[in-house]
Image (cartoon, rainbow, N blue to C red; front, top):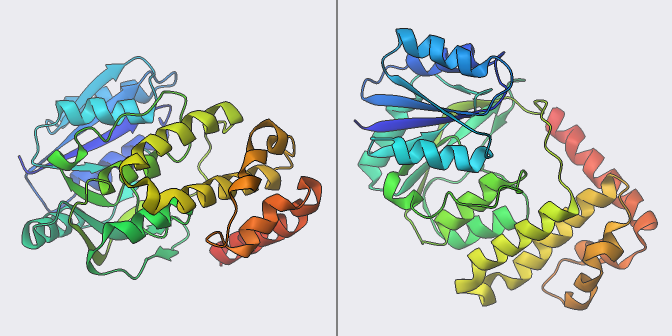
Length: 305
């Protein structure tokens, strides 16, 4: 078996049939699908079982709700393929993507191959990176919350690379994909980029995830521990990461977070932190809201065009 495709499933009943169709219509034979029903409360588990009854390449694992990272880890532990791919239950693989990704990773000898993707509006997301890329700039990109390339889906991994990388506290419900990829990149793998569009991602799909300060504290500690072996290299990037998350809170007018958690960041600012990021936290929160909100509105407007 060459490829195992892991699908974490939680309350995605409406989308599953299309997701499965996009996978089982691929022009590549040596693959399996492991769908992990993460305690769904709608009909997702039944849909998975129904498809599995007619499609022998699909295995379904039903577990109590433990979060998307745990579901991916369980699926990976049960997988038998040489390579691992992750697909979200409300997304699709594009035609020929399995064949394209398998060819790229076997020919390049890479530990992971990263493709490009489109969203449901036809917007193409392409970092412009090609061939083998050093890991340090990729980690910095993720810490800056830029996500200019596929982070966990749209990628094929050697299964060995994922060992020890699919663990995170249950409370982390945002940017867990980035955390997992950073854990992989800290192993200094051979990362290979291709221009092919291999994935269709549905933006802004509804979910019940809440990003609060409790989660942020846990996330920051997990991220700090992950970066610790190269802390001197990434310290300033970690601070900037915290600033970017702070700006998200301010954009939502959650001004209390400065005193509740982020005020100590003011003592960590130096010239290695971009001026605008420094100003965002040095200004009073209610004043910094206006430039932050305008900047994020411009980014959203640009992304929708």
